[in-house]
Image (cartoon, rainbow, N blue to C red; front, side, top):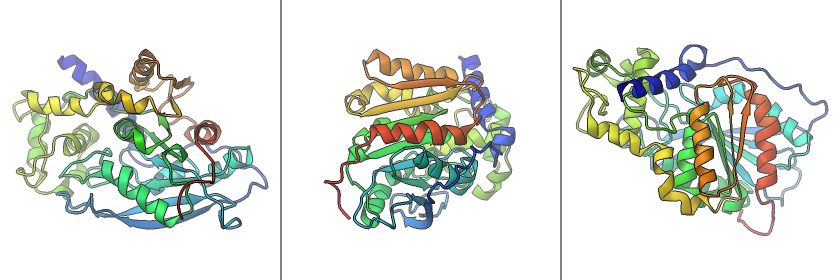
Length: 359
């Protein structure tokens, strides 16, 4: 069991350590000459669900809304919406740069993908990422995305405000968020796409040692966590999301091991309870209603095995899903994949019927 936990930690570490722990340089698709321009709006959305969290993360969340080229020219037209979730240690604006938005969105539309609105919420926090979960420590980011953000976008933009016209996608930690929210709150969306999703299996201890736990426990405040290396801040962020403890200031978490290195059975169970492969069966009745499900992962990505397990689990239930293993690593040609795979997938899967929705 201990070896299993260490292997999972190595896999998660590999996707975030080194260059992927911050902004990474990614190859951009060729710009399509003459492609009509999209417009990016940077807005703030206040979240009652995130307000009052113990980390002190701001409840006023940065959100980037990409409006298609025809949005300003056709004032009576409504659009499907795709919500896109970023990965660990980066913010939404950094992810926009990694996937070369708006150029890739414009490229997809120019190549024939029907126009839609894209929404990129920022879920970075003091520990590097909230993992799109509900927690008194981090705030309720799952509820923010699935409820508050959707309500705000539907109220302020010309959306087709129905589940069948709403998509959800994420990469890495965002892929976990898309899996988590997409399974648990499937009634809110019509199509789901996972890009190299992390954390699908129970994470165990993530290889955290007693010495690691002692260093974390000795931190004087939340701000001091920013200097931790990934093998420590990664498990800390997961613990804040999956095993919060309001009675343990200043960090407000329960770690999976104590300072002697002993595994804490209840905390490991809490982590397992947040693994999509563990809770999928409980929500199959919702997942069956999707119009389409897609996922992809690189053949050199440590997350390949778990992504394949999710594909196979859906297959076992007779739920159609698109699964692709492409040549590359965790971030290989991610911008190409958004333009040429992900957005066309939603263009085929979502409903563009204008008869429903509200302003």
